[in-house]
Image 1 (spheres, rainbow, N blue to C red):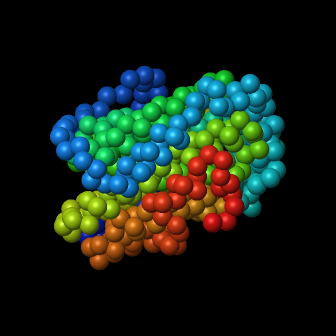
Image 2: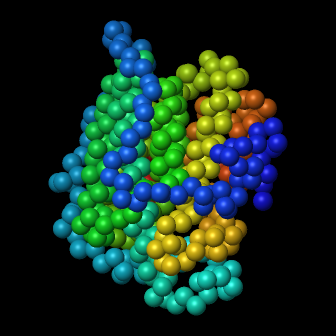
Image 3: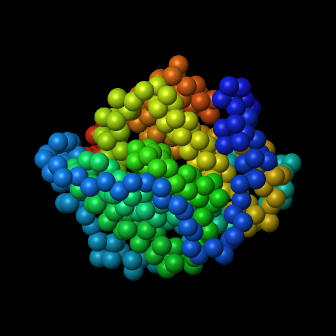
Length: 375
Ligand SMILES: [Fe+2]
Ligand SMILES: [Fe+2]
């Protein structure tokens, strides 16, 4: 277990990033909630300077205009989806996602193929549901960026992302409804993260939380599921969404690079802490506590094993493969005596620092290009 250094204690109220009671203490208290209200504390900025000040953002805007697609007509919604068959095939291809040798003395010790298959079905519904709720977060955050960012070029680009995110909400909601017979409520860790991002009054924090952290993780998670699944509708849906997401992450990197280069150490430290707290919340949500509960397993009894399962740890770490190089490109890793670098070392994700950042990678993700081919 890793202790957060004493002078930085109290990240998310914890001194130990793997404190199971603290992780499970974040729960959804109202599972029937329909409307969720968050105070938007930000100023809305007009800009009367319509000159072309940031050509890279304008180039991204042009790409976004021609990269639009129509979820109703471009995806094969008539494809029949055999949920159990798909999950069984995926599990046969890559395993169950756990190191099975570790669970002999846990509440799942008597689970047979049938229970693991049901777990896989629930986990798929849960994952796609969290993607859906995250997409709504992106829709709201990007609409906020249109209002708050001071740059005209960025307002233009952000407006295209609003449309992209509407389409993403549309496709995940439709897939869950028509093919999976419904999904899960938002995970409490994800909701807390979205609340933090929307509540912050500083316009760059919306970008950092959404474009760098949430969308960086989404791009890696979508890529993983796209590669893994043999279900043709889901595969195509994810491929189309990824072509947009890669632009979104690039938008974050290109915008924040300029801002962070001019910030003081004190201001940067606030961004580093924000990025690390977001990382922990995203990592914690992947423990899938609601899925264990749905399967009748007390998360407190299984979490100590899951948290230390090398197979799970490997998948969780892979989710940071876009975030860490992007944080490096923004200069966030090494300012303030490498504060964020040391935190990323503690949660075991620093090895991705020299992976390709997403400032330019979006071109490779355009629809029609083979994203599985080596660069
Ligand atoms: Fe999206
Ligand atoms: Fe996005």
